[in-house]
Image (cartoon, rainbow, N blue to C red; front, side, top):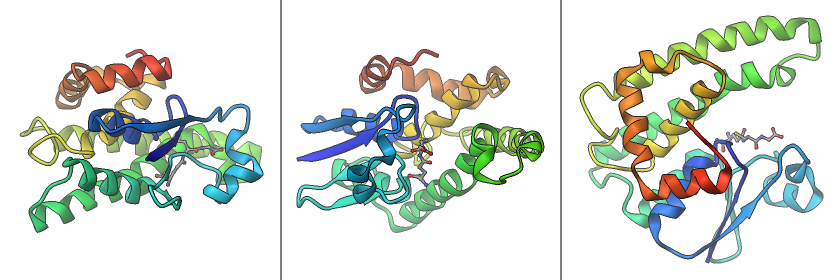
Amino acid sequence: MLSLFYAPGACSMAAHIVMEESGEAYQPKRMDLAKGDQKTAAYLKIHPLGRVPALALDDGSYLTENTAILPYLGQRFGLWPTDPLAQVRALSVIGFFATNVHPAFAHIRRPERYTEEASAHAGIQAVGQRMFLSHLHQIDALYADREWLSGRYSVLDPYAWVFYVWGQRIGMPMSDLKNFTALKDRMLQRAAVQRVMADEGLSL
Ligand SMILES: N[C@@H](CCC(=O)N[C@@H](CS)C(=O)NCC(=O)O)C(=O)O
């Protein structure tokens, strides 16, 4: 049985939604990031960077990084494209999310990751705000002509949804992003998303 290490409101929301969509029994392992659950010696053996998500696989080994976890779960649960070109396009989107959109948000929320000079934090956060907003517009454009990023619902959509939640949380002008807001509304109709929101204590 799979186990998912996740934290409320974190990027692990994507994998959490996918697990709930799957209908497969799994062990949810809730982490409290504020308390430092991710920095315990036991968890650092699972994820040496001390981050969520992490997935414990059926054979007892672990998988880390959204770039690997989401394609793995997508392939396991039929939430991943089957056409070879569509598959690499999906990887391209996941790469964009993991290496551009998420780090832009980290510049805002975790400037201490980027400098030891507290006086430089405001500048890093300002750059992060600009980058994150510009990426939210890029995501909005991706949804301009489609309901789901891959043509049909896939792991890409819960991952995109994470950034909508974060944008809302930090007061970005999310309602200006009509296509992305429509995606958010479609996601809110899904029972799996409703269950994850209830479990993680989220509201939108
Ligand atoms: N590249 C990683 C990023 C994971 C990550 O940064 N997770 C955050 C939550 S969104 C975390 O665990 N932060 C805890 C910490 O920094 O102590 C991935 O995509 O899986």
